[in-house]
Length: 309
Image 1: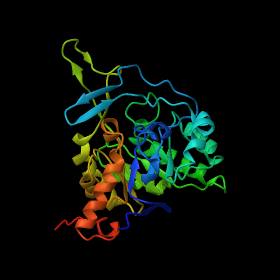
Image 2: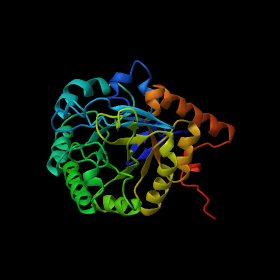
Image 3: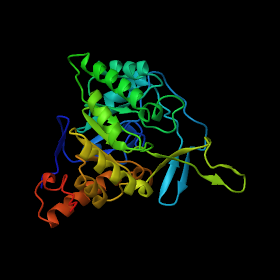
Image 4: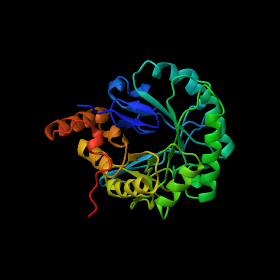
């Protein structure tokens, strides 16, 4: 049974990656799950300078999901390169660096710093976080800003001959027509798309009449958003010719397979990692089991097979 897939020239041993922001920088989860089993790890978002993030409380359970308002807290790209990346190089899995900034120049600065470091397979441009004080969804929900930041990031990727790493762009669901933004990202130079990020949402404590989060709103994730994510992944896959990586509410192998059926080349597991740190490894095993039972020798027999008539 061959579970391998190739996305933007990167061969993944299986199509399951850990989503950014759900396994720290990867090394924190190494004692809980064998990272070598995963197709890849997308590390916590990296900015040019360290960020403290948003005030607590940062997480809130909801029916069939979770709200988070972490605010992209991170140690900064330079400390990541010095302190985290050396350990990540020991693992036989693709390391994807999630990148964000408050300005286009900051996105470029992070990529240029990473260009000089070994051990990164690709960049994932975060233009979709609903919890960033600056940047994030601000870029992903504005067509012209999206075009500007993707174009600049692509030029930064190509600026160092030794790097030339693929650029994945993580899109926000908080737009009217995902197909428009998928096409803009592709035209501006994206090599692949990741979608979706969280849906902007809120939760209220009736006793205090205040938000249940330290920030007024947060990002909704988990099984509750899976139907939205499936629809948007299908629409994006129909609209562009570059690979699409599906994200949103995956907790079982069958969830992941549904994303492949609608056109995703790979998937990312996010919120499930908070409940079950070994969720991604279990999902990989469930995908393998499904394929063996159904006589499927390669995932190419599943990807993009949705019947619409």
